[in-house]
Length: 162
Ligand code: IDP
Image 1 (cartoon, rainbow, N blue to C red):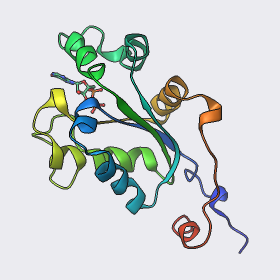
Image 2 (tube, rainbow, N blue to C red):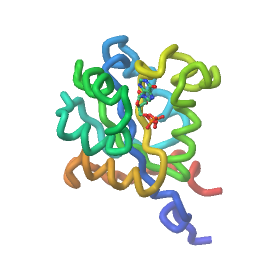
Image 3 (cartoon, rainbow, N blue to C red):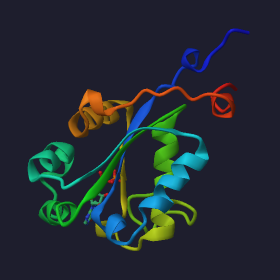
């Protein structure tokens, strides 16, 4: 057939993933990126950022009234964050599974949080949890020009054709 990756629903889905300051401090950047690459997802944006409180206030709108919100702000601004956009079939759902439960005690071993963290206030990585949230977060963290729509060729392309 003439089917190509772009014909398959969800193949172009994108999600925002951020390696939080504890992940950077603990030298986990490479191990975390490796898990997404080996799964077959496509990296379309990547940068290290010192996040502002203004960006976090927009990013964590749903947490403003929580008692722990000030400590989240302090944690997330305590050092650089590595922000990424990953693309691929069902990437939002698959990424949440890969990242694991918000509370590391509930995160299954094999997940990033289940392997690398013990407390909810230092849970190593952020990932968007729905299509709407992913679109909002990607446009909040990245300029359009920072997202690179490169073509997966050869064997990688086969991963998208099911
Ligand atoms: P998520 O990161 O798994 O999507 P959310 O409920 O959106 O979970 O919470 C955002 C972040 O706020 C969590 O990843 C965690 O770092 C922090 N957080 C959530 N609950 C608590 C808490 O009870 N104490 C401290 N930090 C928390």
